[in-house]
Length: 320
Image (cartoon, rainbow, N blue to C red; front, side, top):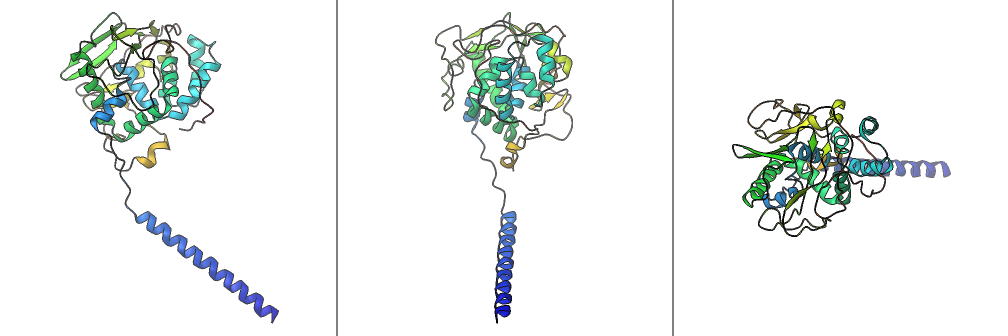
């Protein structure tokens, strides 16, 4: 009798396991058959608000920021690393950065510690920028051009000893006045464009009131980092195609953080032609004369600056 009872219990348990397995398989199949929900795209106004803090930077720097924003965890780690290695300069810094397991865009940004610090400080904004770039690449670059046109119309964007502003058709190009020296513009991103731009929710910055609406810190010599293949001269835009270019090919982010959100994206990753020619394609220049960081930091008023190494933010890992 006991043996029969044991057999019955075992059979019952087996039936329960089989039933639970079939139920799980059925749910999995049903989930797999559900249509992917497309990522909700930001409005043009929201994208303009999102790019306002960086739209007036030189093209190469904007390209680096957009690419690096798709790796927010690495930005946090790079900011902490820069603080811990503040004694490194020039060739030593570049060589140490080259050993890190970061995306080339994040490595390139270490030439601009104040920019890395600000992206860490405003990590929610950085993550939103990266997600927007992944899902609406062309719309993000359109927003950059819209903001540049607004600043130019307001009289706040023009050539100077620090930068050269030129126009190709309807495209506004910003590049350093001296090929191997970059001046990061310092400005209030919510008033420099003429009509006020709403402050991005939660964005932390030091307000700038009154003119001049754009100022510059000390120049940062960028040539030396180019010798590693991921530095300044490797980055730019093909404005005609509305793509970020890295080493003369479209940049593709390999961070899976945004992959699950990118079904149905419109801009997204370009895997077709290399887009190495066409209207708006910028050639890359640069020497090997890197002479270290310098200049005023982000800690002063405004946005941007030179070589200040800001505070860190925890211990995120990094994966490509």
